[in-house]
Amino acid sequence: SPMIVSFGEMLIDFVPDVAGVSLAESYAFIKAPGGAPANVACAIAKLGGNAAFIGKVGDDEFGHMLANLLKKSGVNSDGICFDKDARTALAFVTLKADGQREFMFYRSPSADMLLKESELKLDLIKQAKIFHYGSISLISEPCKSAHMAAMKAAKQAGVLLSYDPNVRLPLWPSPEAARDGIKSIWDQADFVKVSDDEVEFLTKGDPKKDDVVMSLWNDNFKLLIVTDGPEGCRYFSKKFKGKVNGYKVKTIDTTGAGDAFVGAFLQAVAKDPNLFNDENKLKEALVFANACGAISTTQKGAIPSLPDKAQAENLIKEAK
Ligand code: ATP
Image 1 (cartoon, rainbow, N blue to C red):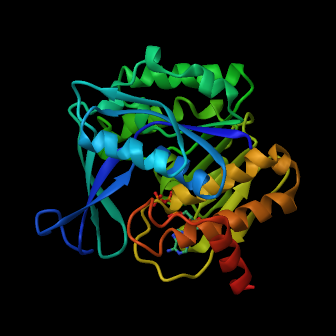
Image 2: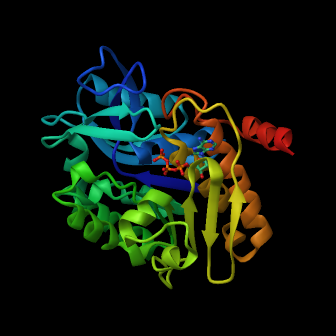
């Protein structure tokens, strides 16, 4: 099946073993593989799709563990580089009582920020149907230039571009720098997925209002998707807009829900790029993506809770 290449950070999240405590108060941390683009690649592979990941980790135990996990998950790992000097990125993540997350990063700089343009496996990108990326790889050089070069190569080869900004404010010098950086590549994408919080951050407006969301529209887009947590998602295109309801599940940890959603949606696009012209097909793909997002919240960690096709189809059937 057509290949989806995901580009960016792969790292270790350290998450307190109990939710609702601060980093200082927590006693033990669970080691959870993460990094949104790596999660997306795993989500696609779990659904039976053809996924590859491009990024850099340290030539250390964590880096090799992550690369092996991707391989074991069925993701093409030819594009993973190992840095001899820098460490694999670490993030300490607090799960607050209200389910929101707070991040503290160890990057000084970490290996993911040191991916160089010369290290890119461009042939992998050119073969892809979709090239997916976030915004963390835009924060500093040399990774920023590698990101730009990868996007350019994809675009020239007629590959569809998919952007999930994944705002992580503590990594940017200032909120303004984050907003500018995230928007600097806005017009390049064929589709963009943002969460309602990200709409609020980027527009300073009410994310529930369609005209606020549409202020993020760019005429180069084929589709703009806003995810609304348990409520599901909204979609906006040149021809139509609408809402697709989410699924009620026993949520334990929402980490990676957005990535499970994106992986499922991209896998549907890879199979049928004409999805954007047919509202019923588009809705069907978003129903499936909502189900995948929901299931991913029912277990701890981003990758262990990713659903396969049968699990998602079961949830959809049960809810009918
Ligand atoms: P993250 O950054 O945590 O990966 P996100 O903020 O990008 O996620 P969300 O809106 O939280 O994205 O979740 C993406 C999708 O997953 C939603 O559109 C929804 O379909 C599903 N989802 C998320 N949280 C829940 C939940 N608590 N219950 C059911 N479905 C959920």
